[in-house]
Amino acid sequence: MSTKKLNENNFLIEKIKVLRSKTIRKKSKFEDERLDKPVSFWIKEDRLLKEKGKEFTIILRTKGCSWALGETGGCSMCGYIQDSTIVEIDPNHIINQFDYALQKKIKEISIDKDDFILKIFNSGSFFDDDEISADVREHIYKKIAEIPKIKEIVVESRVDYITREKLKKMKGILENKYIEVAIGLETVNDYIRNIYVNKGLKFEDFLKAVQICKENNIGVRVYLLFKPPFLNEQTAIDDCASSIQKLAELKVNTISINPLNIQKNSLVEYLWYQNRYRPPWFYSLFKCIIKACKDNSILDSVRIISSPSGAGSKRGIHNCLKRDCNEFMINSLKEFVISQNINCLVKKDDSYSCGCLIKYQLQKNFI
Ligand code: SF4
Ligand SMILES: [Zn+2]
Image 1: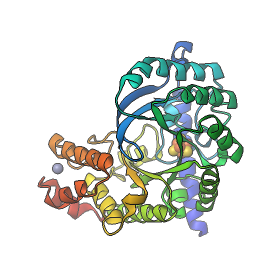
Image 2: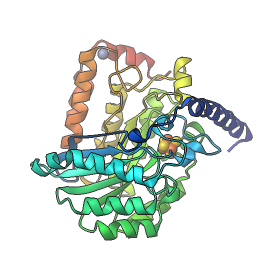
Image 3: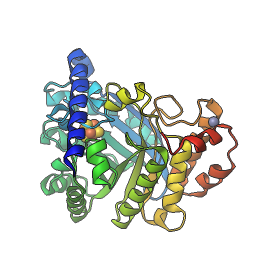
């Protein structure tokens, strides 16, 4: 990597840190009552490994991602620190958050005819002891083990905290469930990931984590960031499609494509205000998935999902801002995710008739 590029990255890191400290300074303390409830939780339709089912998602409030709170300021698109306490949080609060969500939804889960996937997110790393202690994790595992309708579980973590010991412990208590550990790889390209996204993760370290998961019979879910900053639409399509193909070769279990959405006080928000970044177009996302999957059987071996935050809004993935145009794309994407049938996107790619397609074709190599 050239010195010039490293300097550019230092500049980015400095900028991210300034934005991050502004957020932290402005944050007010959460009251105890709020600390006993999760950031949010919901149930909705989702794709399970082999069939359609439901997801039960719980977003826990923790101290915050160590990468974002550390020396580098965190990833350039991330504003999750907004939901975190920043200061130490008593582990009992986290237990209460989990129990609260479970108690509110357990009846709905038990009478539903579908099976469930439970997603526990904490806008950081589930296996980072500074965010969630070993005792809290164990409490959560034991509760889940008692619910037969929950067939699959997903937790997310930076690779630094994924150890054989922690995976063994989890698998030991949840031996009858399918577990996936989600890793924010963002792209297989080290340069884009570390210089543009400031992820601080080498592909080789990702591979080691995949290996540890496989050894413990635990699945791997990979997050790909669709259209990182400093890429235009066409480059974003190429980057993400080649990432999908590479990950399919590695036999990861699930690829979750996250189209970038503009999060508060992130570096990307700063670029967006200056008209130096536009969230991706739906047309690009469809082209990317089609490009990666059309001529081969990738979808037979890997589940590809995408549930974009802020879809159809100015800050999220969108075409023009016409409601119909975006809703059509959102519905097509949902159909694809549930069915894993690429035709849900193929027919929409060429035949969709909104006038913004021409504008997109003219712009896609420039922004
Ligand atoms: S994207 Fe993930 S790893 Fe990066 S700063 Fe945000 S929470 Fe931390
Ligand atoms: Zn349109």
